[in-house]
Image 1 (cartoon, rainbow over the protein chains, first blue to last red):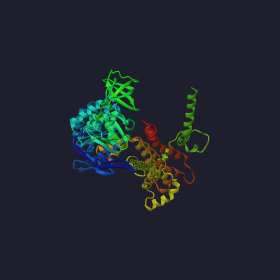
Image 2 (cartoon, chains in turn yellow, purple):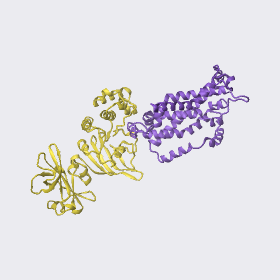
Image 3 (tube, each protein chain N blue to C red):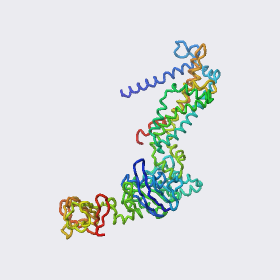
Image 4 (cartoon, rainbow over the protein chains, first blue to last red):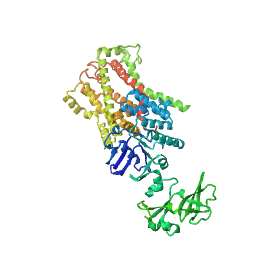
Length: 350
Length: 271
């Protein structure tokens, strides 16, 4: 197990900058996730830590040892790939044993270690099969087994659940969390799915266009987004974003907008914080309801106000109907203000 | 029905067209010497094994077959080993200027052998390799490498790169990853390339004629061409030798037929 520190890390492919200025520390035993849209550089980050890419600048430390010029074999990390990357010509047993063979572990110990891991993952009956004879979920388990068998310094996981169907994905998500608690190994996880990131991680770094936008606990990212990008990316359904210019003069935002230049501001408020009423309520804005989305216990309603769309929540069974009028109350203390151009959070009153 | 019938007739005609020379050789090889240059009879009146026997008594044909087998076998192994290493670098390790290297490799294979045979002869003589198997193995390997490099590069490129990366993270060196993961998965391509190279080396005539002088290094095609004496052309023995020389190739091709098709069409369709 190790603490992983990334220091001013930068990666270029020819002239194209894929990552720049990445500075952060992943604590020992932590479940740490890089989340971001596809092509943001998060997989490259994982490859840099694994040693299958070399950084163009900066350093990587495992505890007190600098590793960024070391061969993957010397770094002793295990990786689970998105495609699982099982060796098609080897049986499940040989796939799991493969990293131990590379380290010249004695055959008897390989056997017992492989069987221990197979037992943990429910693969004991499948050891002699080839990968092509396995279902998607079983392949996923073999890929995990190949990582777990080594007791490495860190687990690196590159979108390990994205090839599974929805039900299995939730099941494996719990399994991953259980395995992390059981083994306690530092885990660096990459996903484009913010919900997955929130559910699994101790801390999350949101990556956008090769830079870390914000790094913090899931709760911190949700409640205190540092940038417009993070606000938009984290949380489901996504945050309502209202154009400051369109709201100029609206009484209820008077105080919030006072410190910001309204024309260049974007206001954000989470749908979960917006309450929708079927009758007039003091301080609420009147809007035409465009769509309603029943979600079991709740009903989401999308309204149009001043040409801006707002999504809010109401109790299911409320008399909020499409094409009728409803009142959306926006709690001012939960409204975030961002600069449109830079995306930076503006903090009025500070 | 009619379409199927026509196709059957077409196939028969095609096969007959392709195999007729072979059949003619087969008939010639078992005709008594007296009937070889007279017509009729079209078919032999009696069968004889004399021509086959003459191959191994009148000529050192066994030695010559062995020469061919050594040259073709070693050439195949060398070209595959070097070709696999080059293809690994080009396809998996992302060498700089990959397109340029591949184009250069291809252009080398476009020189007609007759254009390079004289300078090569000088090189071979200067190195003291005249009339040795080594001379043939080295030149054949260099002539086969473009094919091996191209076939294997394309095949390796179709293998998921993550398999290589996984092997590296699992603790293997690049060379071990090549040997333990990529080569086993590329078996069809290796077999296909290997067979094509073996056939080329087995049949090659021009360089073999130029670089060899005695039976110490003479190969089958040259030996057959040198059968004719001052006063007669031994058609029967030539026919017998051709058939004997074709046999190993036919056996290899049938044994690996399925693998060849897999190797040559790999990546054409997503599997």
